[in-house]
Image (tube, helix red, strand yellow):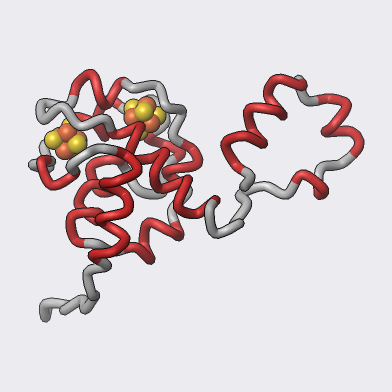
Length: 135
Ligand code: SF4
Ligand code: SF4
């Protein structure tokens, strides 16, 4: 089977922004996969944390923008505790979210909630959901 050549350009500005906001140097990641193997949310993530680090190292912003991973990450810090390189991956996920939210790109639209959802959902869950998912 012929090799498929994938072309992309590294978005250096994006990489710098993620580093600035998170305070984390994702270039220290050596792709051991411990974070992905430990993540309790793994089955719900479109891109596992190890691959998030690889895409950041390569500066592939488009793939990360399409992913549900930063929004679905539960910020449980299991990956950070186990990472042999001491990378706080939850902080990286937060930085990815903040960059999107600062562009006024909401992940949920509060006005689209139905009356049933507003009445049925616990208020604390709604407030924390809005804080995490809306700009
Ligand atoms: S902080 Fe996020 S990425 Fe890390 S283990 Fe927890 S859910 Fe997974
Ligand atoms: S645990 Fe740390 S070093 Fe290993 S893949 Fe994840 S971020 Fe990289």
